[in-house]
Amino acid sequence: MSFPLVRNPGEGTLYPYYDTVQEQVVSTSETRGVATVLRLTMRPSDAPPLHTTAGRTKAG
Image 1 (spheres, helix red, strand yellow):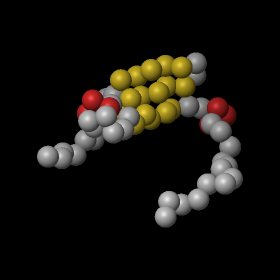
Image 2: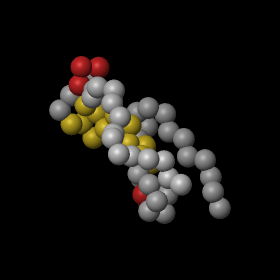
Image 3: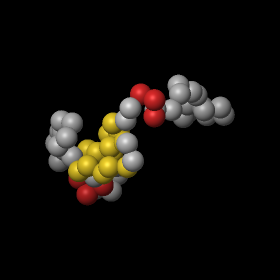
Image 4: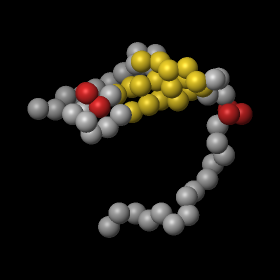
């Protein structure tokens, strides 16, 4: 049985890390060990630059 899982910002578990806030939106216990989803909130100056990762290809 599947069900939709939706959380608004601030409804998950918050983990402060320096000037960044990591919010656990979905945990492995909610997805039968398949996934954990985090939402990161940070200042624009702390975000990494736009980039691509060389050598990666789409799965077949």
